[in-house]
Length: 310
Ligand code: HEM
Image (cartoon, rainbow, N blue to C red):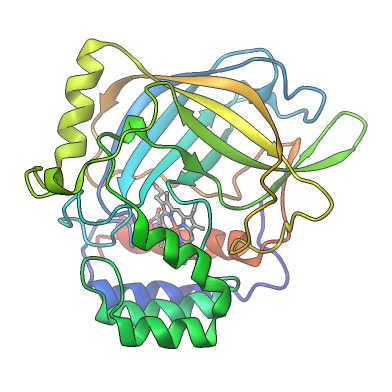
């Protein structure tokens, strides 16, 4: 999937440079969500998405999947308990040999509406302590980009999870499902954990090992597979598809379209996988969201640097 014409690919290297200036450069690691762990699983669709999309992995055949859970920090040694946002990237292996990626995080909104705003706001994170900018810089961001408030407020209130398997993960961006008649329907994805939601109490945070989430998953998987339901929210006419800073209305129709079972861990240090949110099959299209299209370019640059040991 190619980028959108309104997005400037050259700004993508600037975005990756800003992240490096703020957080440092760690050769071989992703420039965001640097520390992560890979797992194998199987995704089984339930057929509920078939009237809405012809996407191969959302019909009636189970497909293998590779899953990467991550800490959002660009710093690979950043303790799990300190940066509360976690990532879940899923690569579905399609029956025709191709793949499709679905990348989600534990916060439903993004803080930037455009790539330009991202580059500008990311620079303010230089002052960040424990992943959050100081109050003076926060005030400057909110004055210039009032649309960031909802996401930054959520970020401030978030607590670290007890497990990667006890979080709900959101695609943030909208996508279009396209069915056999060519009808387009805006949707957003959510992964809902079978284990239910569970966060750490404040007093527990200090007691946790810096990589407690990895250890916790290892222990949990010894007891059996870890599951997530894949839900889609059905967008209505007033729900924006081009702006990740605005939540969709709350009374959304939600449909469960399948279930993921994660069975075991696979080796992941300096892995050469690329998860790209615009890597989607026939039957799914990117929305107009400029951040979604921009990510395609930024991830390619990060991938290129980390696979050349930069
Ligand atoms: C302008 C906006 C953004 C920029 C510049 C950006 C940048 C990056 C970069 C450079 C990487 C590393 C890519 C690689 O080396 O493979 C990354 C990974 C990631 N990003 Fe973003 N990101 C943005 C927005 C988002 C949003 C809105 C989400 C929400 C779903 C998100 C979730 C993730 C996740 C989960 C990963 C880890 C993927 C993996 O496990 O391979 N990012 N991001």
